[in-house]
Picture 1 (cartoon, rainbow, N blue to C red):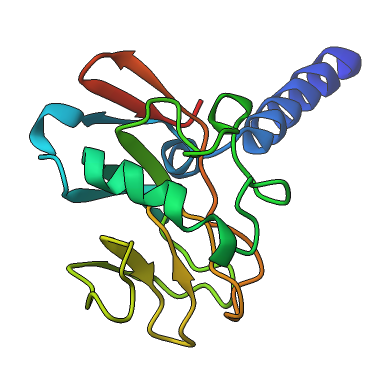
Picture 2 (cartoon, rainbow, N blue to C red; picture 1 turned 180 degrees about the vertical axis):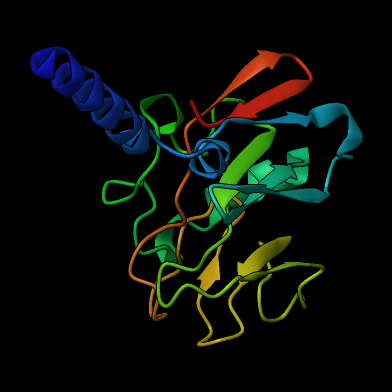
Length: 175
């Protein structure tokens, strides 16, 4: 009888303990994938969604934006993303799975500020660029592929999160 009571108490103690080791519902939702309807994002504009507590930018690049990415090679710190974080299928010159879409974590790699999306730059200061991401905290600049310019405080390119295209108009960020 004592052994049976002890076994019941042991099981009653072990089950809640094991259940407490599993991630909470809040933790599960914080890391859950996020689906984005791309049909609502016009060319030349950007949308921001939250994933894992971070802003993720989805930029619908125009042909002019894509062309401008070729002209900045000499003024970029890591133009070929050799020292950057991106999934293998986005390890290319545009840092994207599909050329018209840039998917980037919108946090500066210097001190964690959120850069601004800027278009219509002055022709005399940036004759070949149609825009950039500019961090107002310390002046770091990134192109529309998230690549950092030389001589700014940010040490690396913006992070490209794991993502895939479920359909032609549905993007899934995360696993």
